[in-house]
Length: 155
Image (cartoon, rainbow, N blue to C red; front, side):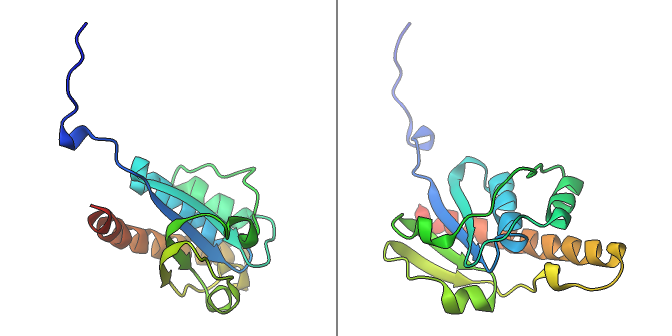
């Protein structure tokens, strides 16, 4: 057995650290976390949190299940537990989170993606589920735009 040199393309790259913050960590931020995990693969270390956390909405779980992602059992987390950590990107997903989010002294860049809260949707169960599906589609679109930029900036 011989040891071979690692080529520059095989070097272990530092993961890009991202936190998604919403009001409750019950819909938008778990969706964003799940989609960045899926599409960002091993290039990202990602977490999500809420300014005032509440349980993950069952319609969030259902919307993600439709695209093959199981988040059942995932618990909402308060944003304060992550303040001491270093993040490359602190991304707020709603205006309230943007206004009330604590300062991340070790955050390199702060972004704001203002997304409507699907939990506020009214109507039949089907109409409410459609609002969650629309939010997931919007989150996924933003994730697809974000990944190449974040990877290029990390290079």
